[in-house]
Image (cartoon, rainbow, N blue to C red; front, side, top):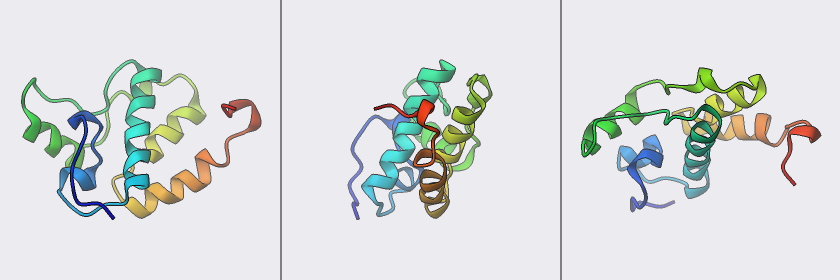
Length: 109
């Protein structure tokens, strides 16, 4: 478990934003989902005014992600949404169910 917070605020997981101890792998699942949202939807899932880091952190902890509906592929949309799950246990379960279970044509080798 980690306790230090390092990284770009937009990619921090809710547990990092709450300054809790966290599993870096599970936190990285969140960050990867944010990156996927940006790549596939063209926008960040959590936004705040420039230099309003506390507002951004509150959004990450409390709000539902935005812009996921702009992801064209239904399976990818569901995967990104499940990896942006705020509950750590549900996020790990989502990884095990959706990411590991991707169809061969969806996998990146």
